[in-house]
Image (cartoon, rainbow, N blue to C red):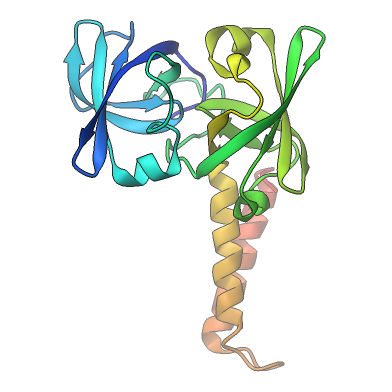
Length: 230
């Protein structure tokens, strides 16, 4: 689990085929690193398979290559790095799993004073997870959605984020890794399962399973409202 607060900009120095996946070598000053620990590389959770004198190596599965930019970004490119969240540490961004949902595209970048407004276009199936003032992780950076419309959303990058991450260096047309908010994903799944269960009932005569599912769903929604999450 991560927070979306990038610790360091590393550099992708090598990428080699490894079966159906690949092996990456990243130059990094993060220390101490431990064999087997998790590091988010541009938002994708990877396992350290080798600690080197100037960084680390990590394997990338076929699934991760298909859903992220890690198989396509140029050697020498900067990558955002974050080690996994320690129990009891401050949660300054939002809960990020490191499981990238899909790749989206930067369509606009407009200066706003000392900040930068970025617009991204995302695949249609992710629309239900992205809401105004909700959270997203873009290349591993925790950002707040200012505006969500159709297939695009806007975020604002403040000078500090621009300095410590690679996000401000993105050019229009660049592909980035997008992870939607973890809570939004589970709320959507909860509503989906409740809807599917209800389809097994006849009008005016809900099945016992449907009635139980509706009651359970209502209880969860009430808990989320009380906690301020809905």
